[in-house]
Image 1 (cartoon, rainbow, N blue to C red):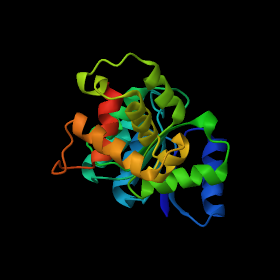
Image 2: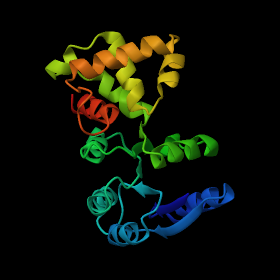
Image 3: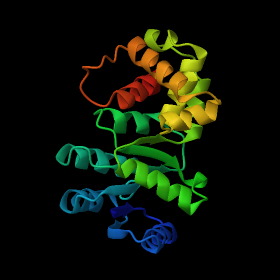
Image 4: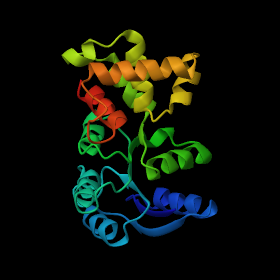
Length: 214
């Protein structure tokens, strides 16, 4: 894969570059600020971008803003956000275009190189990956949306696992049920959320977006 890395801390940025190189991936650019990130994303069009949410010059959400601006110019550009904080708003904004190929991972959970690289690969392949801690925070909130409120407890479990980027097989393994049962639950979720087969966009992504906005 060709990867762009955006991280203002030198040691973490260098560590990511070395990790990617050790596994045979090409780092097309490694930058430390939002304006430069936008330029290289549009110019390089990498297979995936690994982006710290908070970058110079203001250390607000410059990384997120640069990634969103780049996806407007390069639709579907895969972006994996790294953050120190659980902030569902970041995930919602990335998911809002319904194109998928996005992820949101907490920095302090990146402790296993192989697992992290698999997450990067999922995003590069068009998947949607949400950190389990983000999902658990959302699960703890009161469900306000009527459509989400119509889901059964099991369907909400399945949707939460989809938000983590799990495949049908992965959901089945986590819940100790068969894949046929998972497929049925997912079908029910799509129906209850009004995501019909003819719906444009990735229905799994749209379902996750509805979940996050709930």
